[in-house]
Image 1 (cartoon, rainbow, N blue to C red):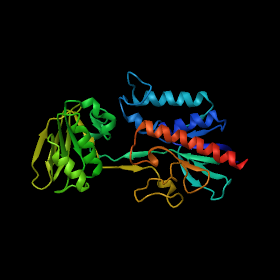
Image 2 (tube, one colour):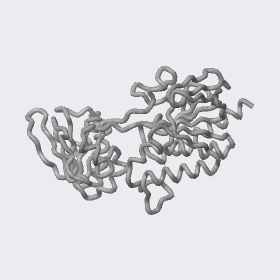
Image 3 (spheres, rainbow, N blue to C red):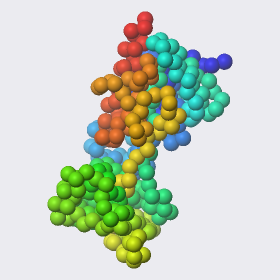
Image 4 (cartoon, one colour):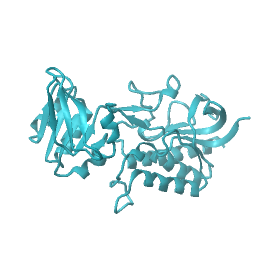
Length: 312
């Protein structure tokens, strides 16, 4: 027998927990399935200094634990599990069917999707080992910790150019490693990079190894044309090669852009299907901050509450 619920939340980052807090307070009795990474991307971040309400900062895991406790205090049921299949109804007031862990059947009146996005990394062992120890995929999240220091940015697109110019205002020197002999960034962004005196761009360059045992002490860059290797002493490495939204399960069902981000209507969190809403990084490739994700989580819960109210 399928379990019948009013509000199902898929994903457990700041967007999911904020949606849960608001949905629970609206007496929607939300059930959340966390996914495999409870707490989402923030649990890979050691220090969070830019989320309102933490005057001395906190760490990502502690903050997610706080949000979970707050959601549970209002009656959210948080469950560890992975949604493996969806069968969304196309009719207003229709019931949405969801399968969890390939066996548990859920029938939900509303669904809030907050599955987030996953930062793309290079995949080399030394990089993976030092994530949180100087390797980051978010300059606006972690750049502050490298004030006055030298850092490396890996990437060649607009995101990499934006991160490099942002870091250049904080750090003493930024070295960009660009894999090809040109940048993919827009001309305007390239001009910004080249006009910034403390940014150096190394073309045909890739990371061979991130140096350091517990924290980043440098990178070994390799010229992919000559094979020459160079050690660059830095304390921070910012990987800016893009993000992948966690939306594979919704392909062909929900409207998404060419890179897989869910499309929401206007200023709302409504998807193309009634009763299905999207919040956080799964539908936001512009800001990707915990505080903006939390804001859209609140919006999704309010949109879901109003949707149900209109049916009564």
